[in-house]
Length: 235
Length: 110
Figure (cartoon, each protein chain N blue to C red):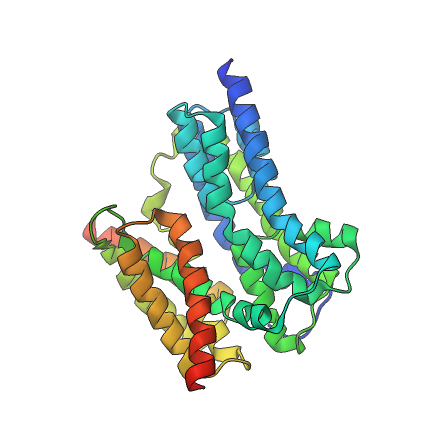
């Protein structure tokens, strides 16, 4: 990664996201088809929701014919962390017009957020609409194409997990955690290590009581508070 | 209600709440600004959320009990982290990760 903020650079920087989304979205399409959802509806789902984990949950709830309001509420909770990501990222787009802000926010994901935050370490805090939009559009189109392809392939490929594609997203988070740790110049390294360790402990014990993706939100809220406290007391 | 209508209505509802979660912070922050403390708090979001997303994949959840270790994911994290330290290139990291887990599943035959 470098300090180039053109649309082209955005596409280039987003290649790893595109690669990992291809596997996940293909699996999503296959799972959706297996659950009896029409490929065009799967395409619509990816186009409008564009959040892998929420879509897997959505498919399982559609399968059990849950109340619409319950599914919508679950989706909101799973995706509520996007609000936190949005607040953090929006600070770097204060000068961007409202329409452009809405356009770029519409494609915000964990991965594009992480990529953008990492990019900041190379650009002295600057981000542009062109760069982010390029970096977010590539994974979006990959996701749509792969969802549809997966839904079409449907019954042909039964167990996509066999090839390890589901680990692509985890690998990305490992990479992004390390790259963030390595290149962040604002927070002391020791404090970052303590926070990573505390996030591990909170995830481990939190899993007893709070379901999956909601736990991520709770851990993030608590971890950041811990960070502020530790920074003021010890650093 | 037909299954088709039920599915399409659910997708529209879920799409709307997700879109609002994405867009509202950007729209509202055009009008309001945040205090120093909140800004400081937000500084910690990236490192905490990224590590949390990683760690949550290392366990299998059983509500009411401690989680069990997802051994394939834990083992595959080793070479993946190593490739992160050595290459600092996200595409390399993703490929190493996928190949590692693929090999592990091949060996244990799961």
